[in-house]
Image (cartoon, rainbow, N blue to C red; front, side, top):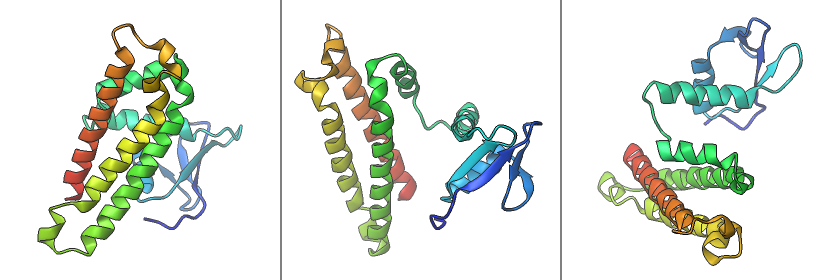
Length: 186
């Protein structure tokens, strides 16, 4: 990972071309995605207005990868994200996602650190994976405690327990994601 220095400033010209201010050349969305994968933050601004366009371009990068079959987000997760824009859940979704990804990064980092200290045979046991799973489950319980306990947004629940089904579905999806990450790191 690159040191946590200033975000790479990308300027969007009126022609919609993207200009890397550090290398003084034009870049593509794939170039920007590569910089991000290498651990660098980016900031994309409109040259004329100064508007921050980072979110718009990050969403475009995700959409392009998803449309190419490089799916990371299951359909039901995408559907839930769309729903979150029209429900009271939208207020907790950004915090939930940010904290989930932060926990995931921390767990991956610990896992890689643990694997570096082990011989290859012991690495197969993936001790960091169980810690990551427990950490994510605890976080999920903390974030959804109001829903299950009847003190939060549970008044929006379907009569047939729809919110609980959604929660179970999210837990299953997180578990599947953790398993995929485990395989990628293994």
